[in-house]
Length: 186
Ligand SMILES: O=P(O)(O)OP(=O)(O)OP(=O)(O)OC[C@H]1O[C@@H](n2cnc3c(O)ncnc32)[C@H](O)[C@@H]1O
Ligand SMILES: [Mg+2]
Image (tube, rainbow, N blue to C red; front, side, top):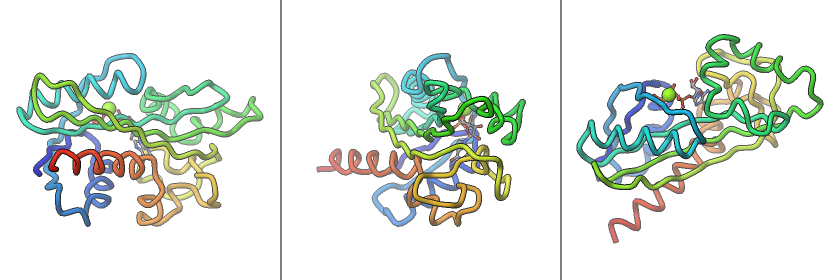
């Protein structure tokens, strides 16, 4: 099955390609487009991106929207983390919690799949719980240096790609997406 992943983020594409790598039933194509995003919940933003992607590609597409949620902020910055990261950097994003005892949070990936234009997208959520820490490790990908998943001492940035891809929010959502796509073929 050939599916086009529409994203303006090269690191996302790299991880998705790697996670799906061993699964030969999906042939992943990609389009480098930074789709406009509405304001709303992660699900609403993801659905809107997916509908636009299906119109552009005129065939089966996946897109995803990623959130970093602070429990002390009732889930914010959530899907708006990109703009906080852009202006404050990872260190500033971690410092936002200085006045709060609760440093817990979660990373969430909301994938949407559409078989083509005019179809209602199907959604899959992957969540990895963790805590927000002062930046540690390479600054290659977004807020990776400040997110320490539960059960690990390392931040996402300090882990090997293999370890991150075996526990990440993105991996968990992709497991569900793959399970769904397999049912379509039956
Ligand atoms: O074109 P799209 O797919 O929307 O790519 P984007 O970079 O705009 O991504 P989002 O809208 O989902 O915004 C999520 C923000 O979180 C960052 N991000 C996404 N996944 C991440 C991950 O696994 N680790 C660290 N940062 C991540 C990403 O760089 C953005 O700044
Ligand atoms: Mg985006």
